[in-house]
Length: 361
Image (cartoon, rainbow, N blue to C red; front, side, top):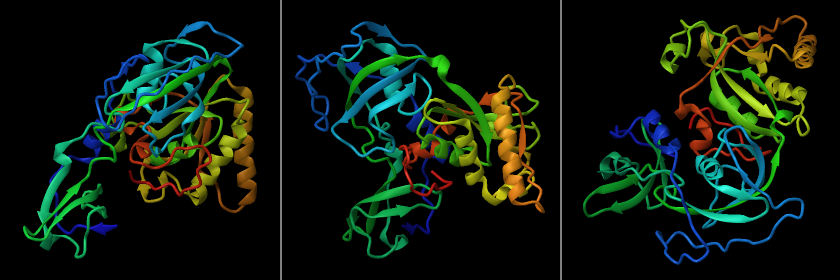
């Protein structure tokens, strides 16, 4: 993509991220409705099929563990899996899906169609602007993608040679579009079978996405671990004075993925940084120190974490690994705009996706 030499005055990345992640309202659509709020949507017929295993009605709450089958209409390319998925309600990807699960009663095996306004984010007029053609790369045409000086990516939506202007739009694809969510709750699972452990590997955006892609991981949450100050802000942690490190809590189903496999993913992601004290890549400071922070009451998990450390150290006997492996002392959730940040920026969180993870949105 091209780089604009000029500065375009628009919202900051953090503001855009906050706007994109904010919760969306939704409206239940009955099968008799014929109204279309948007030409981008079509009504899905509700399925009357039922699973023979159960036809009971369930009401879902935060932290419930469910198996669902869901899809969007109109069909759209998304950075997350559709189809059959296992999710922890209220914790993870696609806010509109989680809100729908919580705010409706469900009969197992029966499909409901929910209207989700602004599913991909509200359209922000401030993110569309015209700039002089003289300040833009030559040869631009409609549909080209450009990268702005502040890191945002924008699409060229108009080129007016007569007026000497290029119009660009940094809104997400499909911003402002309503969609229909077709949702079927297949089963309510036993949440007590899940486990949650915490990892730190520098900036929490990249390591979170790596875990999101791992089959068996059902929820992730980034935050601040092992510090002294209660409930710190991102700015306070970045100052390096609170003692916290950026980390990600990973909730997973041990029947699908083992803790050892998650540790292997962690070590692979960390790479040579395991030998660097308080540093991952170009990020330096105690807030970027790396570690595996296991739940204090999980002796078996603690043993596995330490075994993987000893295994990795044995590969490099002359280079001390400085990664912390210790009980989790504290964990405070990071601000909402940090949660699933790279997924919100368009990078794929689909299971087993092989694409390289970029450290920016």
